[in-house]
Length: 358
Image (cartoon, rainbow, N blue to C red):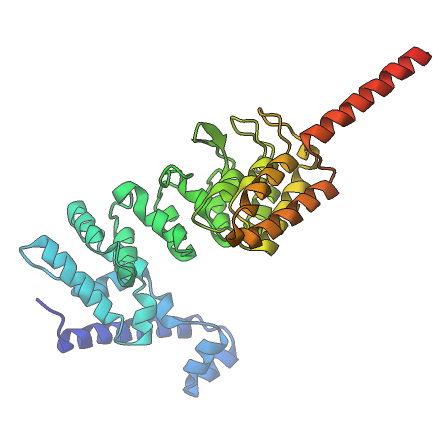
């Protein structure tokens, strides 16, 4: 059966009755003469506004449930009943502003909790990949549909689309944030805004989590630098450093973040690229001359990459950025491995000379 105009009128009248009951409670609870006088002079609307009261939102949830239960469609085919009920609720949201405010997607979902789990999951699989159907996805999640479909696709999609509200909804329903996305880091590490990163933290996600990537131990800072597809702004890197994510972590080749940053493909936005370099130098200044297993310092890596890029004219912008990075490294005491060795040899020679004098 479908929702008719008559049924909508019945629902509307039920709401009006509920509001009147609530209004009577307001009168009973009035304590001051000013309150009573306002009501007698037929200024109860102004009174409600003055008192910051929204009668619709003040109605108890069990009363709402009784009123809106008329929208639940009964059919021998339970899946069809579920679909038609959702359509009825969504149509009812368009009747008036108050209905729209009361019938949130969460409220509709909770009203549909009693439907079979299998039917909820079937409908979710129908709509979750369609962007314009996100309201249906949201209410189905609140109804209790399985949010872990396709290896937590919903949470991945929400994060990659920077949809903070949907990320929050999914985490409230216990979506798993540590699922790997194409072996390129867990879902939470793909947050590109501080707002979404904070949502993960507020939902007790451990942003200091490490994982294996190409045989090395990695974390969210390594992910930000090495990810090839999504360009992360410098403020998200600054945020993770402020939150205490380990910036001293090295990979299997003894590369520190300064090595990897010099070799990364982050040179398209020169200003942001250099800003990230400054953040790393501020976080780990003592690692500026760290030696890799091959005996290279971060300056060596930057110079080697520069030599390679110079061979192709289309990398002129990247070359300029690397030159600036090398200058920045040197400004903070960075030198090549050869210079480091010469410096050490000179230091050792001076120590021997001092010993001989003594």
